[in-house]
Amino acid sequence: MTTVHSDIFSSEDLAFITQHKSVITALHKSSILSVGMLSFIMPITSSIRDSLTKAFGMDLTNVGVLPMRWLKGDIAPHVDIGTAPFENTYVVYLQDGQGELLLDGVSHPIVANTGFVVKEGMTNETRNMGPEPRLIVGPMNERGEPVA
Image (cartoon, rainbow, N blue to C red):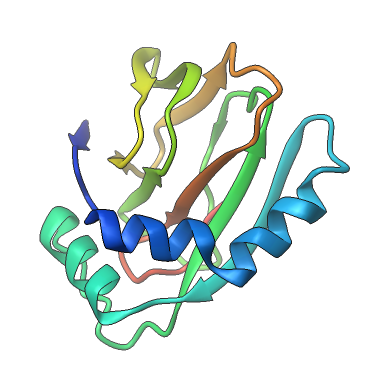
């Protein structure tokens, strides 16, 4: 089962994230990709931590950095894996995008500031995304660790 959450972050948090040096640096690095992804991290603020806790019920008390990713083009169907067992994948799209996110074949629009909780083992992919890069928080597990 997938749950969808709207308006995860405040406008101030969105501005902080999208203008953070690590995000801008990673965007420039991702510009050499025609398709694919570039994973990186950025510091987590108390406000961002609180927003994720409120939306997803995650305990990120001891988490100091947030897994992030720039995506370009479509992502092939896959099941997320981590370095240790986990229950859910958490992801927040930070920008509107053309195309769709498919979770076990169910289509979801790409809407800015919208988060998804995806049960471990579910197939996920994106289609018809176009060439513009999109920024996401995650994908991560319930402990704030990156998954792929």
